[in-house]
Image (tube, helix red, strand yellow):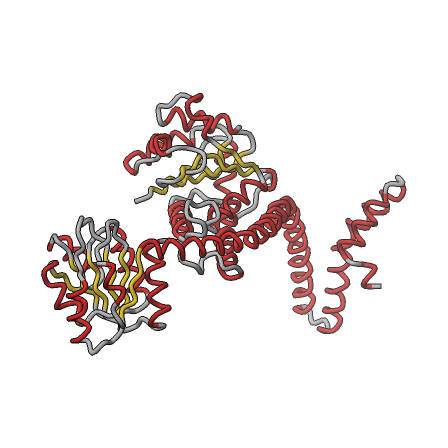
Length: 453
């Protein structure tokens, strides 16, 4: 199982203050200046021997956590470690990629020269785009695979529980989830089968249309058969029977999918009720012959049977495919479908890249907008103070018996005068100093004076 490690950004000094404000939900005046980095390696840059050495083991999470947050300048940080990638996402106002790659190498007892050739670093918009591509499955070994999105969601959940994400990464990761959803909604990136197991189920849907209620016989109990069973269950099939040489292993797989386990010797009887047969064993000889299938078809009154032989060497005799009412496909047939679907995904990926660029630019605009948040807060606080002062004054006048209409009139005039007093004074002073053009232009923009007039 992949390990997702989330690192808390609590630390001493300035970084601690940033994260404390982040956890409180407030804004920090330099958040828009915090740079976002993604640093790591994956299946395209490093062989498995290297990926194994930089993978994070679950038992080392706490120590890794402590080591990482001790690095100067690190804000929020999330590490994603799977069999195909190890990546560090972090925000910083001072830490260099070299310092983080050095930490990664030292933590795993590797020399920097041994690790550096396999690392990639993305900064700013490029880092955001990389995260969006990862979330959307565009950077995966299997183009468009959805599992990585679940891993990122788990990473964010762990970060939230550890209080290690502030406003910046909170928004960033939620944005990445939305981007992935948009990519899958607006493109065909995930609509085509690109695994043998899923291709087999997709073929079954072509034959039967609706798979709900179809009886299934699975021969073998390996990983591929488990994946087939999972996909079939998602399609709502009926009874699932698992046949395997090892009765115990067959029982384990069958129980996971609320199915029934049998031995290989019971296949002829199970075949009579099977609408879908998928076989993947390590047998050197066929486990299902033409004669057995012929007898089963007679008892089925020639109801059609869909068969997929994923094994190499083949589990089902080729002559079975010559029988009427049998639709037999081999692993080569599936590979052809997979290649066609991969090409369709590649075409969809082009549209997905356009979405990712668009969304990364939108996120960049949001991040830049954080710089105005403290000023907006101060402006609203000042206006609220003036409002409260005028309300208190109006209440006193009402208690003194003055007419409500007159009090409301005074309240509105007083509030307007106080709100505009300081800006008016500042604008006049700027005019006297011949510095008013910029302020005038800003006021026209802020209050849309031209539109109002």
